[in-house]
View 1 (tube, rainbow, N blue to C red):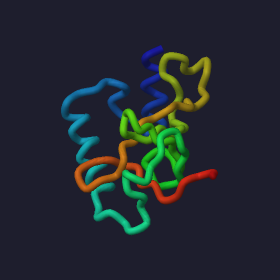
View 2: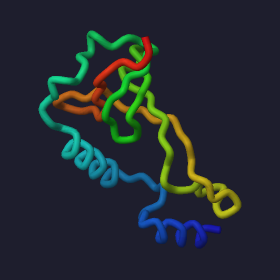
View 3: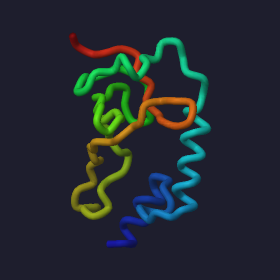
Length: 120
């Protein structure tokens, strides 16, 4: 089974599996900040205009829409992973649909830039 998962990861270009390390976390943070740390656009909604439980259209790493969670101060997005669940592979080669957290975009951190509120 591990060999099949490794072959699948090699096929889709993913290395390292799900193992987490301080170096991988630091590299992921640097890459995210390099990509998303830009000056705030004029079209981004400020924090004080966001309402708890409302869906917002925007730009994020995982999705173009997210629901604002005021208590956690983040957006929750629905993401479709490009890889199968390693625990069920190859019996279930389907991609995973998961709920992912994206923080509000700011100069210091965050990846989701809300542009407009969806719905009324």
